[in-house]
Length: 500
Length: 82
Image 1 (cartoon, each protein chain N blue to C red):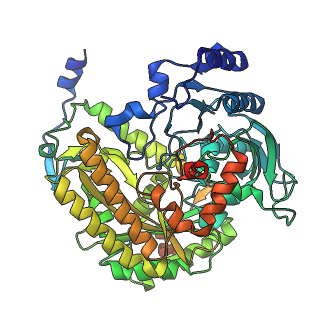
Image 2: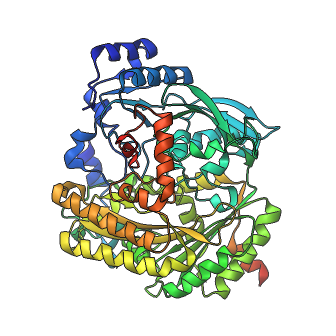
Image 3: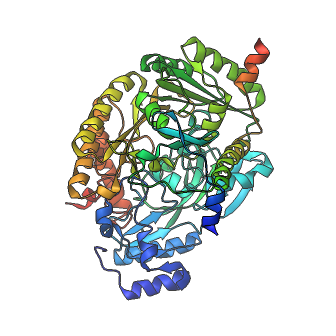
C-alpha cells in the first residue's frame, strides 16, 4: 500500500512510542479510516487503506511519530472526525494514519482573556457543554457540529453556519501548536503571543497552517476564541413564489447591516423540491412555494430582539411569506446536524436508494448566483439523464464572509451518487461532471471551495489555475517544510513540488 | 416476542397526504411504500415510531437550549404588534 513499505521494525517503534493498544493493524481499523462522507470510489476501496493506524494522546507522541515517519520517508495522514466533504483525510499512498481522537482534552480555560486551549481531538459540541457553566461558547458551527473535531476544522479551514456573526474557524482560532513534517513542534498565531488576536510581527503564519488539509503538519494544540453565550436566538424562514424574488430578498437581508445577523441562506426550486420529498417541514407546504430564504440571528436580547423585527420587516417587504415558528425554529435547530442527507436519494424513477453526498461548496459573488445556478443544474441534468445513478438535491447560497455577509456566498449544489452502482465508468463520469461544475465556478470569478478543501478529483486539477502564481509559492513552501513529502501526499497537486 | 409486539402495535393502513408521501400516524410522514422497492421499508411497532418522533423533538429542543438562553418567536412578536 505504502510507496515505501512499512517494516515490522517501524511498527515496533510506533508501539514503543504509544504502547501496543494504540497501534492498530486489523482490517476494520484500517478500512473504517479510509473514506469520508464525500463521494468515494468504493469499488477501489483497497487503494485507500493506510498501512497502520496510530492513536497518540500527546503532542510529544505526535512529534515522535512524525520524526520516525520522516526518517523512513513514510506517508503520514492526519485524521480527525473523518466528517469532511472533500477527501483530505483519505490516504492516497498508504502509510501511517494518525487518528487524533484521543487528544480530546481541555487544557486551559481563561475567562479573563476569553480563550480556551484544547487538544485537536475535541468535538465542538462537547467543548461547549463544558463551557456552558462559565457563560461562554466557542461559536464554530458546521453542519457536522455533533461529530466533527477542532483539528479537522483547522485542517480544512472550516466554514460555520453562524460565521456572519462570529467568524469561521480561521477567525476563531487565535493560535496553535503545530507539529511540522520534520517532527518539530512550533507555535503559530498572530505574532508570538498565544492569546494575541492582532499582530504585525513577522509573517502571518497562522493562516498558512489553516486549511492545508494536513499537507504541512498536524495541529497538536489550539487556543480558541470565547464569546458570551447568546441570550437569544432568532430564526425566520420565508417562502417565495419564484427564484428572482427570493434572490432579491436574500440580498436585502444580507445587506441589512445587523451585527447579530448570523447567516442568510437561499434555497432554490430544486432544493425545495428535494426537501418536499420527505422532510416534514416542507411536505405540507403549498405548491406555490418554490423557494425559501432562512435567516438566523444570535446575541444579547438587547441586540437580537430589535434585529428580529428588522428581519421580519425586510423579509415581508421583499416578497417573503413567513413560514411560521414551528418550521423556522425546528428547521434551524436541525441545520446544526445535516449528516442524514445521504439517506434521501432517489433513482430517476423515484425509487429510494442510499446515496453518497457530493456537496459542491464554491464561493461565488452575489451578482453571479443566478447564472451559476442555471449552468450547474443543466450539467447535473445531463449526467442524471445519461447515467441514472445521480440525483440533483438542489442548491443553496449561504452568506460567506465573516462579519461582512453582503458580497460572496458559499454556493452548494448537492448531488447524490448511488454508490452501489459505482464502477470505473460511472466514477469517471462523476469526475467529469465535477470538472464541468468547477469550470463554471472559475468562469464567474469564484473559488472552487469555500469550506471543504480542493483535494477531490475534479477539484485538485484546478488548484494551479485558481491560484495562478501563488501555486508556485505553495509548492516552494511545501518543499521547504516537508522535504520528503511525507505529510498527506497526493493532496492539492502538491506532489508537483517534487517533480524536478 | 418481537412478532407479538408487531401484531399488537400494527399501525393503521397508510393514507396518501402528498405526492409520494403517506401518513399512518398523526404528524408522521412516510415515503409511499411503492417508492421503496429497492430499499425495503421495515415494519416497526407504533411505540417505536412514536419514540423516534419524540426523540427528534427532544433533540431540536436540546439544540435550541444548547445554543442560547431563549428563542425569540416571530409569531408572538406579530401578535403583540397587532
